[in-house]
Image (cartoon, rainbow, N blue to C red; front, side):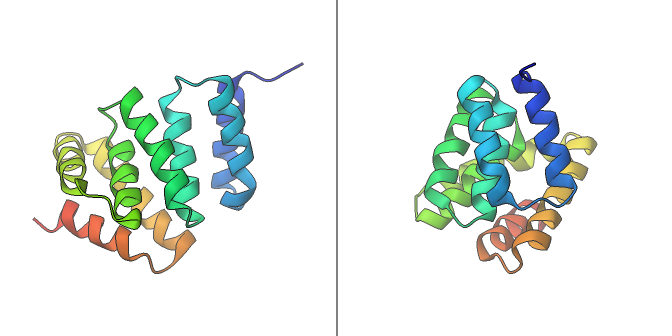
Length: 140
């Protein structure tokens, strides 16, 4: 039996949390976005995987789609800001400020974003763009 995009997404997240390499998960998340092109969470996750693999152009495309599908997701905005920083595109601050407003208004979002930022450093190591975005988000 073929798995649904939702089942594949859940499986992909579990594999990611279990420590599977982002490069090995990218094909799965690409398949999910192909099968379910309106799944903002799949696009947001795909953009994060691309960022971890230092593929900012691919991350930018995926993050733009994630933001378009769900402009009220702070992680989508953060991923887009990171990709924009890494490809040298202007307009980064707007996305960071919108994400900041969202996470400061919601404790769950705040905790999730902090965890995701730490995860980014754990998986990628030194990451100047993430350091900059973290500073903009939390150094008030």
